[in-house]
Length: 93
Image (cartoon, rainbow, N blue to C red; front, side):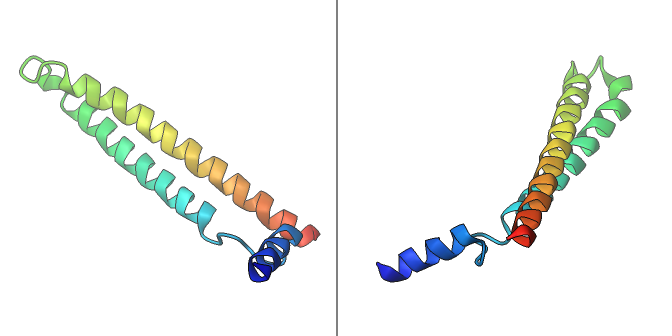
C-alpha cells in the first residue's frame, strides 16, 4: 500500500508522468481519422457523377467524410493543446 501511495504522491507532485503516451495516441488517432475522412469525402465527390446508379451513396460518403475529417482534426488539435498544457504544468513545478 505504501508503494501505491508513494506513486500517487509522485504523480500529484508532478515528478512522475502517469501515462506518458496518452495525448500522443489521441493526436495520432485524430490525424488518422482526419485522413480517412478526407479520403471518403474526396471519393464521394469523385463518384457524384454516378449518383443515379449508386443512389445517394456518394452524398453520404462526402457528408460523413467531412464530419469525420473535421472531428479528427478537432480531436488532434485538442489533444495537442492538452499535451502542451501538461508539459507547461510539469515545467512550472
